[in-house]
Image (cartoon, rainbow, N blue to C red; front, side):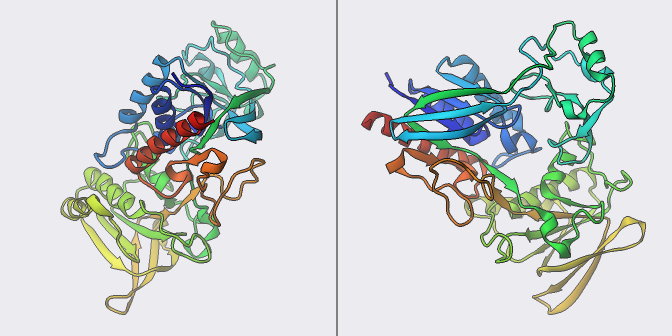
Length: 415
């Protein structure tokens, strides 16, 4: 029987895995996430490696394990404010932001129908809007609406409260401050896409048909803004030609100096999405090196067979507009030494993976490297897993999560 508690910070796939692995070894776990629902980045994908599973495949299993295990307590909209103490005896202060919707919510959706105010849809990376009261997505866990009071239109609150038969709307909710005593902490804070607006030559945000790879995932997802249809944002037309710009912010001393590991595979995967919907479409991949580590070499061959891809070895110098909202991708083909100017209907930037904590002022005794990745510290009883530790795919993230759970248990045992 385990003694002491483990805190897991981050409720994405690696945080969920770490939590259930520790709890199923009879240790009490507190799981927190800053978003209104668990699932992290995996919830935003259409498919993930290695089997090209939909997000529900792995997430639903872990959600069920959480619901069935009384040793796991989880909190959403939660962020750490302070950590004091030492391994085996940490006091952690956590602030819970108000959801303004209580546990009576049945997700009937009537509130959303009468609401007029809108907010930017962050789950879909700004590709659309939601109402001011919204369900994060159709597989949200917990399955409960959230109210963004700042986005309400005049009269919305009264209309929402009137149609809510469950009495779930609580606009007077206040932030809560909770304190937990834990023996070890696992950081599973995940990653964020590198800010594509920092690369002036790639013109992200300047032309509507330049999107990021995560926006492409949302376009291809059945629960995305276009219900799974890959359409150009400018006119909702079906693109016939698309270009992927690899290493958009990665392997660049001016941005992210490291390889983000999964970007090449993501572009190959998205080429297959495109080929499924448009077998006659053409894909151009501008790359420095195509990296498909280990077992993923077979996936490269599959993409070459099933999608009409032309690989162009060369770093993109710039992207220019053409008529009809098309774009011209300009690069030097390093194999031929010739300048390439390729016109396409749409461009996808394979933006790098940056740790979510990069650039964040974390008021806790946490060791991070120069790029913001969390360095595990056995001496401090703090461990990291998934993309909080390094760029990884889902399977590798889960492996590091299991390892972090075991190291956290060892800290409790020694304590």
